[in-house]
Length: 260
Image (cartoon, rainbow, N blue to C red; front, top):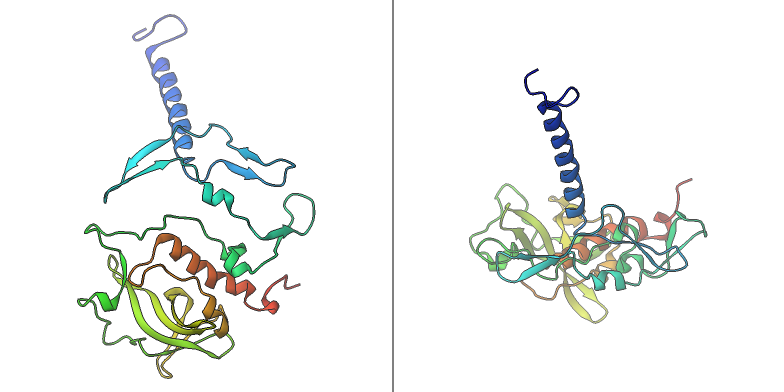
């Protein structure tokens, strides 16, 4: 018989076995690589904090060169993420019990308001400039004449009250599209500008209003701020979006809890 090594094994069998070994090795390699972020998992319900890796284990750290300079190592010691004190407590002692917030859940990052501690640097374009910027710094960007220009419009909260006035528009230079509205609001310490994600609002062109259903007008004063007035970091993006998302459940006592 052609290709036969002996009465029981031939070349086709060896090729098949080699393919199986290669495929198993590939799956293990890919499974290890996807554990470079988010692992080890923490079991904080145990008497002692237990870190869970599963099989296969976490790979050795690898250093990546970033396109705009600097390096990033993964997996990395995410001390900030693990050191976060989440202000919540389980309803019951059994694993899987619902967790109730114990502080201000919209600011503490609980439930729908949760966010990841991503890089505190803005996402950059190929030219090295921030991808998301306000239009006051982008003279080449304009709003389509057939669309409503939100600048100067009043922002109305879920309670029907006025939260502030739109002062500028932040656009994504890569898409391009509007990503945030900049809103001037009155806070206890005075006026401040906060960002409003475009996905949490609805335009009322006739009344020249921007309506937001997720939070109340008074809660705009506590929207997480940004460190610079011309850029927003990845972490700040997540915190801001988390605040508005958390309002869908936590903005009023009536929203929190089961329907039945």
